[in-house]
Length: 329
Image (tube, rainbow, N blue to C red):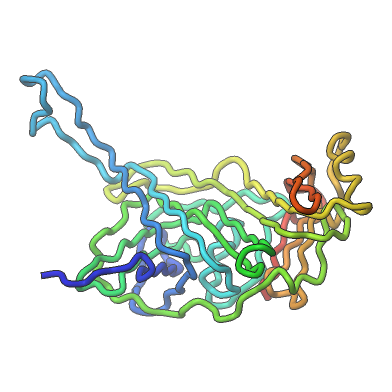
């Protein structure tokens, strides 16, 4: 008889790199824990045929029901506090199209002519996909949900001086074209998330459109949708990326003599801004310093609070420079 009473805060999220896309590694070691506010479980959404047929009567007949749990995309959204460690870095690397190197953290960047990672499930190819484990505190009274063949399709890092002292936060969407395991009993283990927190107050440089600004909040998002094709007994056969890798940023900055041109610039811009378009440099550069060298303004609006602010929306462009670099080392 099950006796446990779980809190949503009891559940943990772990990731581990795969050597073969779609094949879970051994989960009893080598996993990386994510710092999540709470675990959000995916909607399973299997394909069901449950319409009344012409067999007899007006109620679904038992022989007319059909369910398929292979040909579907499974997504899960997670969020929490950001750390420079193997798990969070691997999600960033995945969405940026970089090789996955959780054991040896590397800086993250999107290439000038980035095309995204593609591959085939079941064929050996390291550094491309990962396994996500959503785990209860024990597997005596609960099951792990294990998603293999995962790609990170969206990753956001953000900070707000008015929330939690400006600590860096993250959110991500993880996608797979493989059928998840929903009754795993493995006692997963590995590295817990990092202990160091990053704050907005240790930023040594804050530039928007090349202007040194007084800032209250910012966020940066990389989005690279996943696409799947073919079929197998375990789900889709191949994975790739959508037609655009989108890199966007938002910042709330003080309206003053330095930033007042931004409203007019947005109204009249005819080309991109070259160099220092959006720069968030930490005192310790490896504490998630962000550089978007070139970009365009997509919106500038007045924010009429206790202090007049400008909410500035931006989008990176590619050309002469890597459209984004995130310093993690």
